[in-house]
Length: 167
Length: 167
DNA sequence: GACATTTAGTTAGGAGGCTAACTATAATTT
DNA sequence: AAATTATAGTTAGCCTCCTAACTAAATGTC
Image 1 (cartoon, helix red, strand yellow):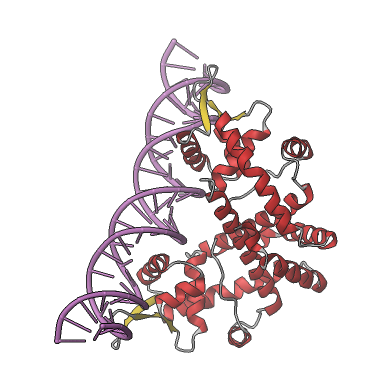
Image 2 (cartoon, rainbow over the protein chains, first blue to last red):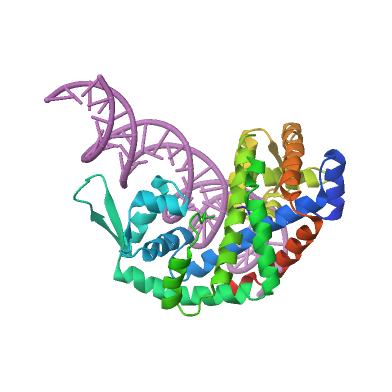
């Protein structure tokens, strides 16, 4: 996501408002701020994960696998749950496989398929990351009062159901 | 940014909470939801811009140029304001240049530099996009009451100043 | 004035996204 | 049973982002 470092100042907004009469300054500022905070948090998370040699995509695959009783799932299902294409998932699995964090297990019934399994080394990696991850999420979100937390949740829910306003 | 499609259900959270005692479910849900809404909005914006043949990076450069009285700026300054590296800015400018939306103007005083200038065709492109962009931002953000809007702004501000909790 | 340092921008190579086209296998139709 | 269609995963090629190394030009230092 683009990092919008330089939000518009009032003088600039005036120039734009003159040319584009429909612009509602408040709305634009809130919208851009939301994009920017999301982007900042996302890169901060990436930076944190990078110190363990991971990135969001690969990390998320490990978590999805750990959620399973069997510690296994298929590439298609993982792709669907992670919200990426199957092609992208191939690349993520390739990387995790190379580092020994998951293995490909062939499916004897249907030879098109296989299962991706979290290795013990993958589980170790998660055990290393997750406590610190939770600690940091707590540190960040704990800055909000419980009322602010629930306000945020309900506002985001409202926006999310209207994301298609942009499509 | 990764799209976190599959937020954890209570059963999964229990499993994780047992293994990682420090996890605060509320915090995690709010954090992930914020990342996800940011990501959804960002891809929706990309989809909108794509229908005009642009993406966020290139669009943002055009806007930064339009903000300038002279409609010009240098690659380094643009990179800094857009929050990307100079190398990335080179690529963005290459693309915009190829489509005739900006031109490179050589600087006679310092032959290392040049200025990037918004062409009239670039201005036309913005004039085509921006009114519709503002309309859609209005449509989306107008779903929030003015109180919700200001709540959102203050909550985001709080989070933003604590983004380094993750670094 | 020659040498070293800084600055502006580009290039090269890597990562993770995407779409579209492909291979192999399984399931369905006829 | 043969031909078609659907499904699982990969490959190829493109985009945007990154870092690191490079070129060229300007500036500082001795």
